[in-house]
Image (tube, rainbow, N blue to C red; front, side, top):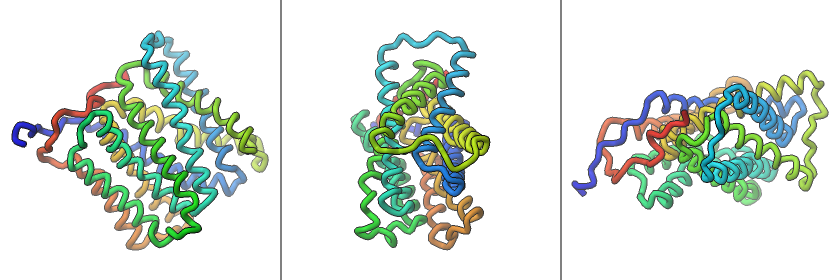
Length: 315
């Protein structure tokens, strides 16, 4: 084993901070969505509105940048796949929330962390370093503890579990794909392609599912304000940061860093809605934070080679 000992690859601390910010913004996004529900929106309306806002904003940036579009065939085959897979995350999660408690779906969504490790192992033909595996276990355990997963997991409440698991798998695939795009296309172009394709798919899906995508309850001005706010802070900024800094951290570390979503969501939900913030929630959030910090502690790791995505930028 001595020949396989390598110092852990150095990852840009700023990129790690930005990926943690992505998770934190998603943590704020969850309670904001609850408020939007109370205003009369449905989940498909919010998802579609966010995709529309993302498409318009990223499209405007792409036009203003006036940079040549990549001629790499791999880019134009990969981005459609990323868009389709990315659209599966909110759709499957929506179905999970319709069939069971939100706590079950939200906890199972965190399976994207070990799923990402598994996909990396298959793609790289290399078992992830022990610290990353342990981090994934801590993140999922913390999520289960904070959401009282085992207390709520009975036969009736688990009807949506398969869909939440599919959402987690789509999230992991999206992570792995976007982290390997390297320098093909600007971050704005990649974000535009993802949002535009997902936004174009949703009306077709809604037509077959019978979903109404045009909000009827709030006044037009109020609905516009809600959708712009959620679109910018729930879609535009996080997606841009994800596709820009994800290749720098690698999908394995990146998926762990975005787990900041849980402790932020728990704290904000407690402050806004009076959701439980007892010892279980605090301990669960602490486990997630430990899991996030573990890969970055000083030390050596038995790592044959760094993640090929690490060090590539989206510039």
